[in-house]
Amino acid sequence: MAARRMSSLISSTYAPALLRSLGHYSSRSTGISVSRFSTSAALEEPILPPVNVEYTKLLIDGQFVDAASGKTFPTLDPRNGQLIANVAEGDVEDVNRAVSAARKAFDEGPWPRMTAYERSRILLRFADLAEKHADDITALEVWDNGKPYEQAASDEIPLFIRLFRYYAGWADKIHGLTIQADGPHHVQTLHEPIGVAGQIIPWNFPLLMYAWKVGPALACGNTVVLKTAEQTPLSALYVSKLFHEAGLPKGVLNIVSGYGPSAGAALASHMDVDKLAFTGSTGTGQIVLGLAARSNLKPVTLELGGKSPFIVCEDANVDEAVDLAHAALFYNQGQCCCAGSRTFVHERVYDEFLEKAKAKAIKRVVGDPFRKGVEQGPQVDSEQFDKILKYIRSGVDSGATLETGGERFGSNGYYIQPTVFSNVQDDMLIAKDEIFGPVQSILKFKDINEVIQRSNASPFGLAAGVFTQNLDTANTLTRALRAGTVWINCFDVFDAAIPFGGYKMSGHGREKGVYSLSNYLQVKAVVTRLKNPAWL
Image 1 (cartoon, one colour):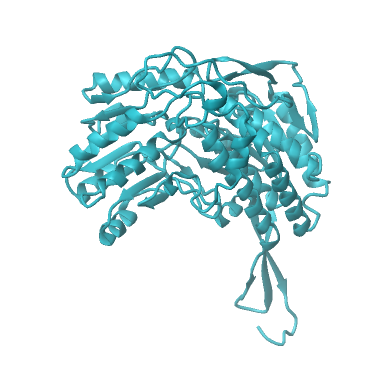
Image 2 (image 1 turned 45 degrees about the horizontal axis):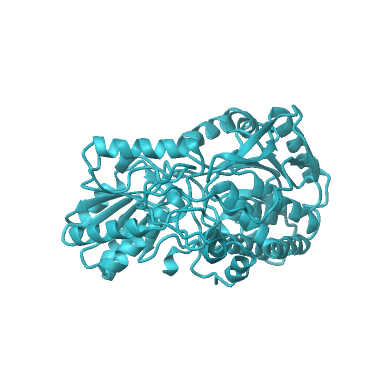
């Protein structure tokens, strides 16, 4: 179904070449069959990823360098918990070095001073290089994160490339206004780059979050210091090397890998960072916002947690609704901030929907993400794995009915069975908290007014999904739901031009599309007195 794609407007023409490039990728070439989650056999030995890890150091001022402390930290393979590589562990001193390089590049370097057209050409050259190296980029993303290769190859990496081409197109179209004033004055506004942008990205979609932040910041003429998630540092280092091959001046883009309490906190509180953008949990977002406020009151864009309702109305085609609700929740192992994790189903179709949703979850293919046909890989790390299982136990203990799943899959790695709960009540933790895992909670409702009230009775407001054949019902829900995105008869449509962001505790500001440019620009009013003007 097209709605499952990260962008319904991007073709999957990249995918076949990528998949063919993995000579040992198919089950035929390995002699290993794919198992559905209900199989009791342990997972097979993980497939060797078709990529080498080349970059593990910090990228500061155009050079890969060790951390000042000399420390490293391990990044692990979520398929088995084994070491992929040791990565330089950035800390306060490294953040200071990176910010200093970014400040010098902004104040003295060519990036904000070159024509916007030339900046656009560099962004386009980078996109071309990313496309050329898509096989390696995809493999690194899968290896470090655990997401299915087919998902990364057909959905995420093409959208990553598309986002940079999109922002390249904006670079030379940023302009201010001429304003009519009440008097003899010429008034204009300038949209100026804000300066040094600090950016902190999460582990669930490392490269897409990189593009959401780096793309608009560079298009507007800013310089960047980006901190990667400690769980998934590898792909950002790789693509940032390609950026410099594309002609990006040194110091414009700096990458610091490290932990949140040290490197992340240092970046958020740095007095020479002009703007901060963060994607992650709501709790951490509150900390980041506080650090920014207590330092130099830098503006902050926040894209935070969610507990998105997916509403199946009584007139729905149940088979189609089941497919869409399944994708809305289980995509990326359920590790999506906007996952449709509260599945509200009208009482008239509830029983039919439940049985079909359960059957679909049972058929979901869990296994090595490098293996063809796998729909669900491991969770990203042991912490997330343990957290999800804890929520599953909470659901059982609170009285929800565990229809299927609920346990570890296999004996190695961080795999969890696709899980479905019925008879879920609004006051249960599985209906209130962001689980960030493959756990579908199915709730029953009677009428539109009720489901609107229950959907909005959450501190989150990131997204919502509506499945109905009635235009009036769709329009009513679209306007009533307090969420930054409402998908009608689709879900997870992430076109480069569509803005994304939350209401309430799901964040501040918007990413993607033209709205994201304002995050990285300042507006200056310029007023000039006119002497004997011919007209006003």
